[in-house]
Amino acid sequence: MDDRAARLRQARLAAGFETAAAAAEAHGWNRNTYASNENGNAPYSWRRAREYAAAFGVRPEWLYDAQSPPSGGGAGSSPQAAVIGRVGADPGGEVLLAGGQAPPEFAPLPPGGTERAVALRVTGHSMRGLADDGALIYFEDQRTPPSPDMLGQVVVVELDTGEVLVKRLLRGASPGRYDLESVAGPTRRDARLRWAAHITAIVPPWQARRILIQGG
Image 1: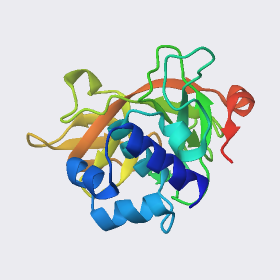
Image 2: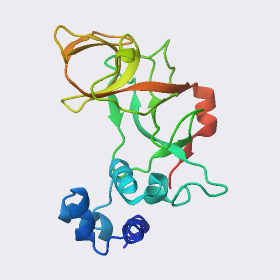
Image 3: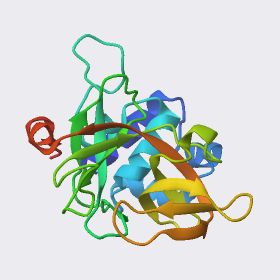
Image 4: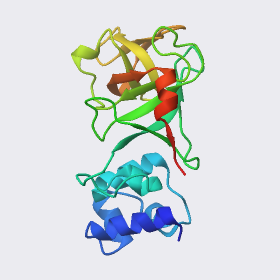
């Protein structure tokens, strides 16, 4: 059993689940998938680590890569936000989410940020004027449907197709539909969204280089 799988088993037992099957059933997970994650046969992704961490009451950074204490509140604890993907490499503003096998990067929480915060790293120059190449974009508090104060703002959205984008959110032609205006590039019309989230902070490239931490 590798260290990541061992931490998952430790978290499950500490949460009061005697067996992997009991934990999977309680949280609606596929039993075989969870068992494979816990015994190390199928290393779990950062996204799955966040789900398991929330269920078991531990920090996702610790569960995934031992980057912090198991849980918050102690002296010296320093919660961090994971850099879950890259955005801006093309005019469409599509987010390329991090793969499950590569260790993620982490960055300190922005002012006022909570442990739900995650970050995107800007790649390329298609977001010039909002965030330059190498900047970090933080977001959290995903809302379904988008709240009225998001209209007219540049936000992070997930479409019903599974695409994650950084776009300016506008009303669509009918209820429940939205136009998504690119920082550069064409506007996508009448999209259906799974969620939208305000951008909570943008860290410029020179500062991002100083604060990024590479997972092991």
